[in-house]
Length: 124
Image 1 (tube, rainbow, N blue to C red):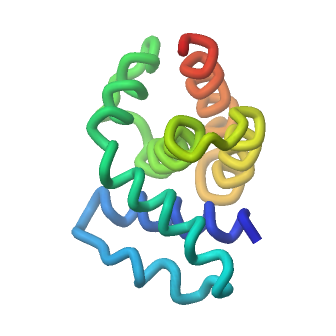
Image 2 (cartoon, rainbow, N blue to C red; image 1 turned 90 degrees about the vertical axis):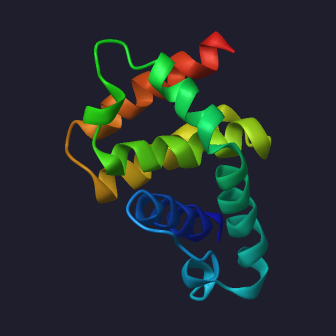
């Protein structure tokens, strides 16, 4: 299921903020057919994280990048990776991101993430 792939990718991205991670550590619990999609997200994130960071930072109106919750950043990185590099429709990626935010972050995070991602999508 793609939701499981996204959750594994989110966990990988979040963990990578703190230490070097191995992708395989985050795909072992996935079904065989889902591993490819999850790896695509993680690998594209790794290849493009500097560009993604610039995009997110540029659209954080009224917020400093360094002060954003790491879980919120990981959710935004995951969604943007799908939108920019895997051609996932923005509405799908954003909806899935909001579900991750509801599960892993604060009460207000979903609204914040939605605003940032929507601004990015409208601007590109």
